[in-house]
Length: 381
Image (tube, rainbow, N blue to C red; front, side, top):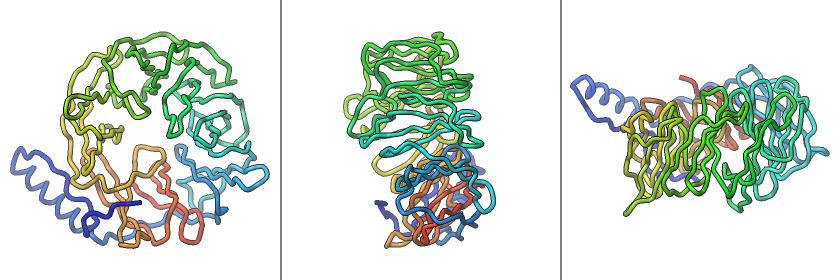
C-alpha cells in the first residue's frame, strides 16, 4: 500500500534555488533537521475515544469527525469533536441505509451525502452541526459554496464521479434546501467551488466554455473559453485567485494558470504527463512519479521540491493541515507522519503500531488504533 523507498524513512530536504549564503545556511540546517528525524518521537495523543464498530466508516468534516455504523438498524451517524479532550460524542442520529457516506461543513450545517455502490451520490441531507437534527433533504449532490450552496447531478462512473456533473447546476437556499436558480448544461461539465468568496463556482463545460456563477442569484461573474484539456474531477484546480488547468502537449503536459474571474492565461509550467496537483497551504502542490513539489499560484514559480516525496500517502480529510503517511518499519505497522506547508515537508512524529483508517480533521489526525478505538493526535506546529 505504501512504497518504502529510502531506508531512513524521513523526507529528504526540499530543494531550493540558493540566492545567498544566508539561504545556503538555512538549507543546511533544514537538511540536518529532516535527515536527523529517522526515529522521531511519537506525537502526543490528544485523547482516546470509544471502541468503534468493526465496519464503522470514518468521515471528516471541518473539526468534526463522524462515524457511521452500517450494521445498526437503521445505521447510526455519530459526531465527535476532534479538538476536545476525551473525544466526547456530540450527537448520535439514525441515517438512511447506503453503500457509503461523505460529509462537509456548510456554516452551521453539515451536508451528509449518501452514496451507491459505485460511489455516486444519490441524496444529500442537511443537518445541524450542533445537534445532528435534519433540516432538509435533496435527491442530488449539494456542495457548500461560501454563504450558499449548489446542487448537481454527478456523471455516473465506475471509478470516481468526483466533480463531473450533467443536467444542470442549481443554486440552493441553505435555509430550506429549495432551488433558487438553475442553469442547464448541454453536455457534461466540471464544477469547482471558488474558496474565499461569498459564494462563487466555476463551471467548465466540455466544449471549453467556462463561467463563474454567483451562487446567491446565478449571476455570471466571469466568462472565458479555455483550450482543449483532459477535464476531470482533479482538473482544473482552484488555488488562490487562479484556475490551474493541465493540458496535454507533445511529449508530456503543461500546467496553465488562468486568473479569476477573467480567465486570462498568466503562466505555463511543463510537467510530466502523469502529474497530479491539488491546493495545499496556499500553494499548488504537485506529484509526479517520484517527487512532490509546490508552485506559487500567482506566477507558477517553484516554491520547493521534495525528492522522493511521491512515496508518501496523503491522508483524506478536511482543513488546511493535510498530513501524509509513510511506513516507518518494514511490516508497515508504524507510520511516520509529515505535514506539508509553505516551506515544504516537516516530519511531526510517528504513529503507534496498528493504527489505521486515518482522517484529517483540522489540525488533528483521527484514526482507529490497534485496539479498535477512536484516537486522536495533534499535527499542529
